[in-house]
Image (cartoon, rainbow, N blue to C red; front, side, top):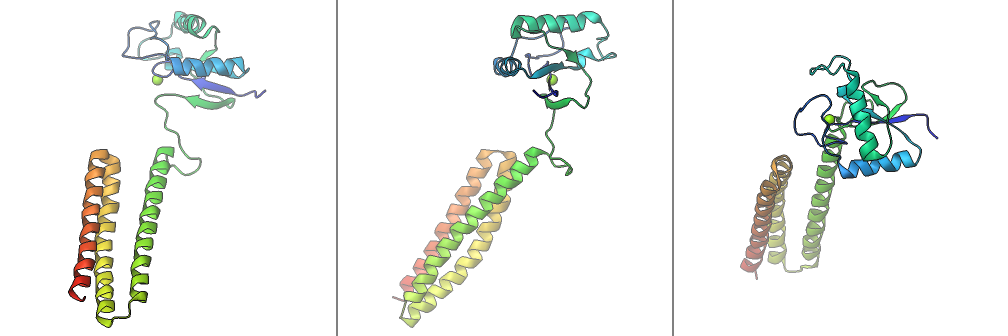
Length: 214
Ligand SMILES: [Mg+2]
């Protein structure tokens, strides 16, 4: 068994927190987290309550032995086990579960959330590019299969127009997507609708050019 320990924050992580009611007043247990901690302790993992309530000089005068007793009593009641209480990190701490913590990629200064968002946008852009490539390939095949010169020229003009539209829509799409991602799904939907409009417009341009020459 590992000698390391898992730190679990109390307020807002293991116990509900809706504001300060006093150093020994602890909120109701949060079931999912209680279940997780109970599972860990059953597996023999070392878990410590990691809380600023145990700080020697907290803003609410927590330097009071009854605080730790209150937390341990809460643990006994809701977890069925008394856990160590600390506000100190040491080399044995292998994980910290805390509603205020931000997970950071080692040695890069980037948050895991930033990385995830960047990966999502990159994957989306790749998908968008792949979709466009398939569409352009279809148009190229049409061009290659066309023997009528006027028709062929029309296709080529349509394709050039399509490429210009593609640049517009791709750029609008990319910017809009990022904006939508930050500001919410509603904006993203409107951007997607705009992109669909542009795609439809492109199809109409190609069709019109095609009709004019047939
Ligand atoms: Mg907290």
